[in-house]
Image (cartoon, rainbow, N blue to C red; front, side):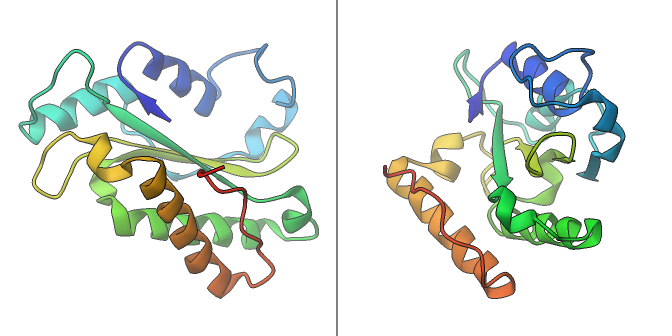
Length: 173
């Protein structure tokens, strides 16, 4: 998902579990919030950190510029069934390594694993900076065909370590 402005604070509140109650997601079990953990902990608020990076890299922006991109990584509940916490952590660490092939880790604001819902999942938020220091989500994520390629490449990368992992539904569908 691409975010341009005020909604960045909303995804931060959700990802970093800053609310007492989540009307939009009744699956969140606040009593298990302590099981969540970061692979990359944010240095500050998402919006302030994205603005800092954009300024630091000298990016030009428009009112409608995409300032952060959020990636959701998960698998089926069956995939995680019977896995130890360390195995689940290794799965998400491997997924993070894949993302870092496409995006400089310096631009990743947060990578948080949620264990307080039915299925473990990773919310990864980054500032879409290109190799030549431009803010350009379109170039990084591209169109539906490019997103499908990302998903295909992700599956190929992950299935090497996790052969029982099946390809999820394609973005092309």
